[in-house]
Image (cartoon, rainbow, N blue to C red; front, side, top):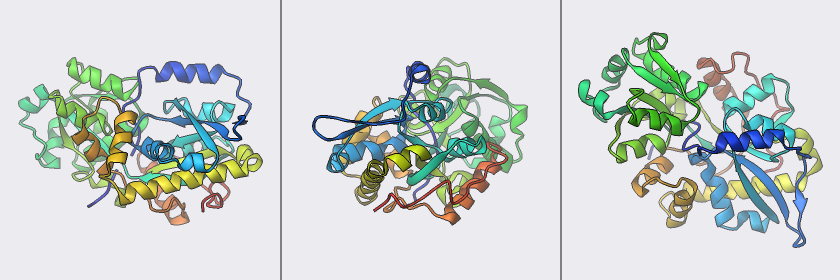
Length: 342
């Protein structure tokens, strides 16, 4: 099985409101210990496939064994860093792009493990557009790109827009020549596609595959067809981030959290088709069919160990720069650590 990827799918329509509420809250950068002696922490998630490791850690009792209770807060790419900095969440399941953006702004964040690799992206076109241009799931990448040269695309994040641009440019299509419609979330991408307001969009699974499953579009590009999105080339994935001050003051909690997440990623890596994993995926990404969830899980590189490496960061930084997301992206040994992992 070839595992692949990237960031950000099935965002709940209430995410923006939640994020706004968090940003106005007075976070105290601390977690709380209950009468049962367990520490409750708030964790920022994106509502996408990369959240699966956290959910499995909870379902399998890994957090509980570490004396940790978890409260999830669904955030967007634009609100995650602010929530972490304000103390509204103590942990953030973050994309490398957002993490590197925070570092470029001088924010004191620390990556304590990676919990999923790749860019599990899907480029889905509307049924009408597919019929007009004779596109199917098996259409060669070059033919797909050529058809998109005269189209209206939806974009709900700078990342996915740039990743779509990598695909287009690889086949001689200038992404700046397309008409782009800015949308607030992947869910809005899907709504605009079904309404005929856009011809296509790119986002992380399972939304694209679910659109196809529902008969509203066709997925014409994925990491199998677009090597620029593949984990082997991009070295992209997801990291668990905390504030350095929180890690320094709550070392035992950070170690327990990172340990539980590593146990979960190792479990998924060994049991990708396990009913427990699928059951958790159903609850995490409601509305997606089982076949869509299974395909989405297979597109992620689930690490047996969540250790970060210098070589991995170099590849990630190069990818982030290649999509123009963080032109001055850089990471030092002070910005990540494996000391909280078992």
